[in-house]
Length: 114
Image (cartoon, rainbow, N blue to C red):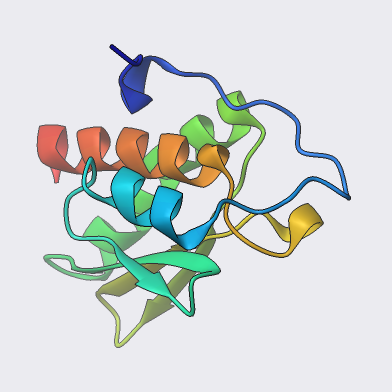
């Protein structure tokens, strides 16, 4: 039995590391809630927050997760309360297990408090 994403820790990905094959990315996607694969190279989740302050506070709660994992999502706040989160491992030009680990931890954060 494999270790759940929430219990894993991001590992450094060096340039030259191969991105996850699409089949592996699709399998890991099944462990997440509300994320989609974009062009097989990025994970994306769109959230509608209560208001602007709620969206900014969510960004502030995501930041420590990203720092602790040393793996940082792209965060797009538009329309004052629409937050889109995108994950990709830029060093390898695609998806790594790290993207799914951070996505799972963001899912836990969102389900626990908004």
